[in-house]
Length: 328
Image (tube, rainbow, N blue to C red; front, side, top):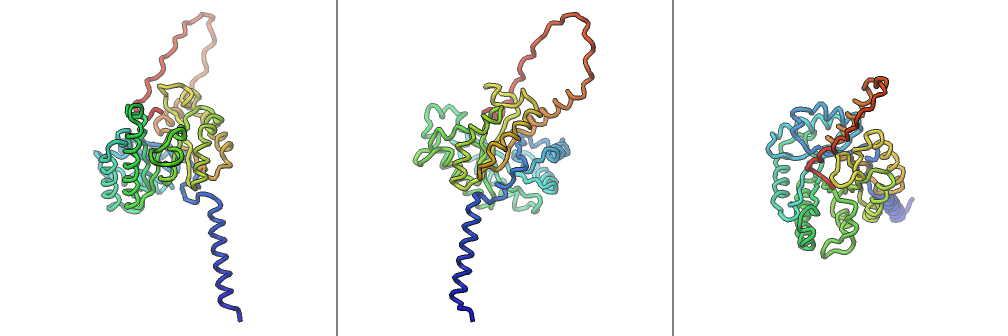
């Protein structure tokens, strides 16, 4: 007869060994395992009424598995519900997207978002519900980032804690965007970098690693990826497709869709050794789609006529006016 205490000890050791083995592979959330898919931002939710078919076709063609969808409380909730149901049928998770620089100083907008989501989720069917919350605040765009940064960050810290608590009450995953240079700053009253504090607090982080070459993207993201490894948190790497008022090197707008794809593939190779790497995010749907449409249109243009030998005056087109939203 087998000694029951010995048998129990063996089972206990086996359970502990399995738990240790699972933990040794870093992050284990669904979010962290979507390295093959893409995420993108949809800042104009009114497209759900006019172009939902286009959005979903684009998502399917580009292997978009996570969509960050802007919340506009002027919209009818059924617009969100019907779209999310269709996205769910395609295997796309939809996160409620919101945020603005003033959220760092004023808690009321984030509280309004949580209240709206609580009401929405309570009446939504399982396939109509949001899968999580995605926050883009960017307090460094405020004048207080220069004139009173410690007070600004302290206020933002408190507001983040309140927002995360609201997400927990709703049972929702919550994640946030951060610039790659947050590792150069600290959160008041906390040890370590500002980026590590953010990574530790949120369920996932997206690094706005806005550069236009794979090597530069991997280089600017490496510290946050390392912090994600230490903290056991998933970290996405984001790239930009919209024109920039800063410098062309932060966006793939000039290089085009094919070059973007080649550099994304190279980034994946460069960071493949990081257990925290959770995939690529492309900012944003509008810019990404315009880039692809432009390249496809150029590919079907008729061949140029033979030269007549006459010299024409070349006129340089002015750089397009950048959109007012989301410049990093």
